Amino acid sequence: MGPIRHIRKVVTVSALLLVLTLSLGGGVASKSQDPSATYENLKLFTEVLSIIQNQYVDEVPSKDLIYSAIKGTLRGLDPHSSFLDPEMYKEMQVETSGSFGGLGIEITLKDDVLTVVAPIEGTPAYRAGIHPGDRIVKIEGLTTKDMQLTDAVKRMRGKPGTKVTISVVREGWTEPKDFEITREQIRVQSVKNMQLEPGIEYIRLRQFQEQTASDLDTALEKYSKESKIQGLILDLRNNPGGLLTSSVEVAEKFLDAGRLVVYTEGRVRNQNMRFQANAKRVYADFPIVVLVNQGSASASEIVAGALQDWGRAIVLGVQTFGKGSVQTIIPLSDGSGLRLTTAKYFTPKGRSIHGKGITPDILVEPPKVTTAAAERRHAAGARQEGRPAPAGAGPLEGTEDPGQEPPGRPRAPG
Figure 1 (tube, rainbow, N blue to C red):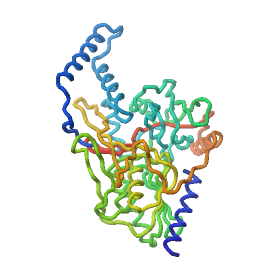
Figure 2 (spheres, helix red, strand yellow; figure 1 turned 45 degrees about the vertical axis):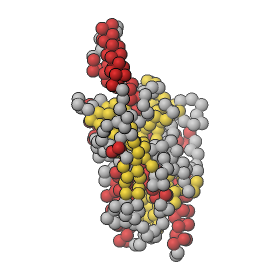
Figure 3 (tube, rainbow, N blue to C red; figure 1 turned 45 degrees about the horizontal axis):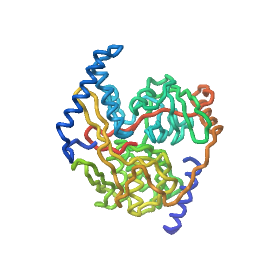
Figure 4 (cartoon, rainbow, N blue to C red; figure 1 turned 90 degrees about the vertical axis):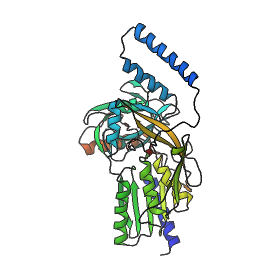
């Protein structure tokens, strides 16, 4: 069978699958601030702090006041910059391994509303029927309006076996719905693969973690030994992202050495970086179809954009999420940390993904899932666990960026 016919077959199979499912270091600022103006503003801050400490109706520890002030400062920058108290910072470092306690979703702030990027397959949130784009308006009865991402994550995390109630708004619903979800220890297997038929391979990447590229290599080598790969379906649907370095390592497996995968631009010179393909083995002799949807974000968009720009793959699905900024994790002296947006990333042809996403070469809309269908899916997941399904079940929880880049290294949050 000729290669063109194989491409058509891969595209056809991809369409069917889509229908069936769907920190850079600091540095010196580029422009110095007026020291006198900065001093005057700090003077005002200390004045307010002193008044609160002396006159506020309740006594508040000074550290709590400072932490609250820092959180407010970062909240005013962008949805992805945040302050991590020592407990959250320590937990963030553990997440790189892909194991954490919670419900299993990626969340972000979109139009100042706590919004689901994507559920992680196989988790309580996924079984509950959570969708990309669902908006979380309450957590345990507390409104999420003006709530920082890290605070929302902290409230939804917890000991496995415990429950959390959240209120969710979804497009097409007339009012929010409450959902009681049982937390689990979330262990994410980032690569899932199968052979659709001899020569036609399917690989799904659920997240971009430290071992993702290595696991992908294992799958590709296995298929190469069994039979010549004649076509690959690379499924990035509902993949919220993860490590920037991992996305580069994945993309370069399909690009010739020296080709640009992604580049970043920021205010500080050392934040302007270029990541080029340099894999030991390159798989460049078969066609690829990349599946995406609105839950494909960040690192997923880097891979899809790079393969699309170089004509290495056909991108099929719907417009991706559009999360194209780089966050730096900066450790602080008391064990806390900053998660600060320091750059934006661009595809090889200079396309900014931030707020726009990747436009598929072939548009395939997913089927509309009704509320009743979502509840049936949740009930089925509950029966598999041997527990009753909560009434009116639906979504979710969140792990804001399940795979964090180690401190001081760039990452594409997802």
